[in-house]
Amino acid sequence: MNGVTYAFGIVAALLVLVAIVELMRKGTLRERHAVWWFFGGVLALVIAVFPQVLTWASTLLGISVATNLVFFVAIGLLFVVTLQYGAELTRIESRMRDLSEHAAFTEQRLRVLESKAASEAVERTSDEGETGDQ
Image (cartoon, rainbow, N blue to C red; front, side):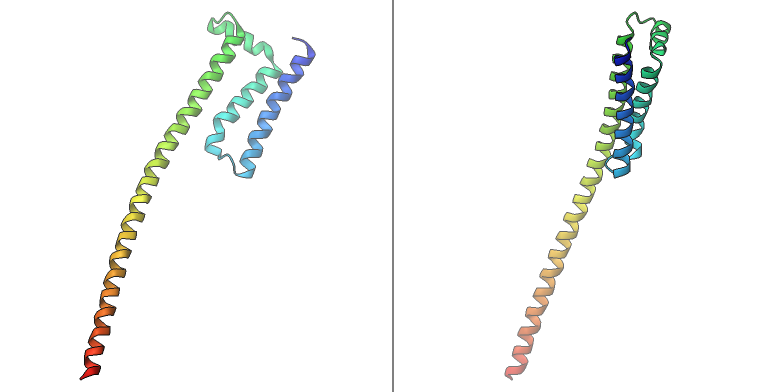
């Protein structure tokens, strides 16, 4: 591996980690979602600093081309992140449905109460009008 490739790998991994921390700091990315991204960034940094770890791990796992291990791990990491987001989306949709139903019931109750109040106001007005005429 030449020096430019080595330096590019380290800089890219550091940029990813800085971006993750910055997104967390700004509140754009929550900690529970950042865990897997941070794990991937640290893993990329370790492999960038010590490329022989990738060769060792691929040999240990019986993978003939080390780059295939990188793709496999990246796809696995993206699968886990997608699964986590899918579960979170399902929880949010369920909560949104519950809140929508609650809002609809509250709105319906408000309409009934307003209608009842308007009817009572009309009755009071008509009762006062009859009493005043006599």
